[in-house]
Length: 266
Picture 1 (cartoon, rainbow, N blue to C red):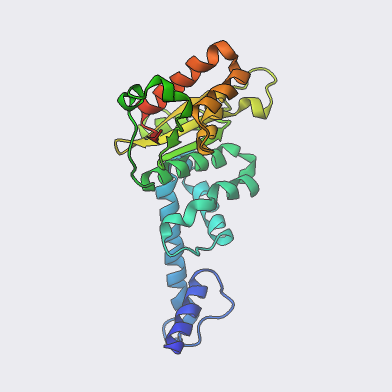
Picture 2 (picture 1 turned 60 degrees about the vertical axis):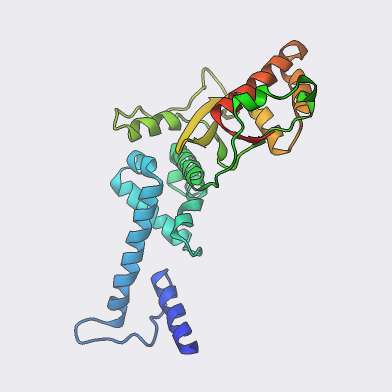
């Protein structure tokens, strides 16, 4: 078994990029050398990795075009060899790679499209959970509202984007005319921070849905992540939107989250 294990490890190292020396148990033939024989497998696995990246990132593929997507895909394969037993997670680092690697870091919309598409993919894999509906919220006695703790279900993600990526992706998915990528919310001399828009993504009825969210709702959702109760959320909103508007704003959020189906418990 030791010899077999060493053969397997040597073969794996070769096909994943260690071309220093082929496994000694792979022999030359009259027709082709050991290196050429092994190269068939090395090329095949790279093609498979490229295929997976294309499946995970169809929007990025469309934005970049076939040749550029192949180029960035091969560069990513070299930079991030697969270490996970499941190929499902091979593309997990693509957005970070695109943000930090020339020449693609000069096109930040590529990294943002990767962020958006990976979040969508994660939602499809997220576990099922109970869902709190509007009728469940309505049944809570008024004297208990301050103590309830809204909890988001696992199939929820939030991403911060500067570019019109969701609009571009929707056009690509619908085979519509794709609008030019542009930075959103950037009138005048707005800073990059002012350009950023937060998006809420969730799975509902086996579909991935999304919508942009205002800064105060994004803040309230972060409070849900830390298990703060509704009273604390209202108190925090008082500082952000004023005492008169805070209670209504918080109640509106709670109703909207229930209508969207993003809560698993209160």
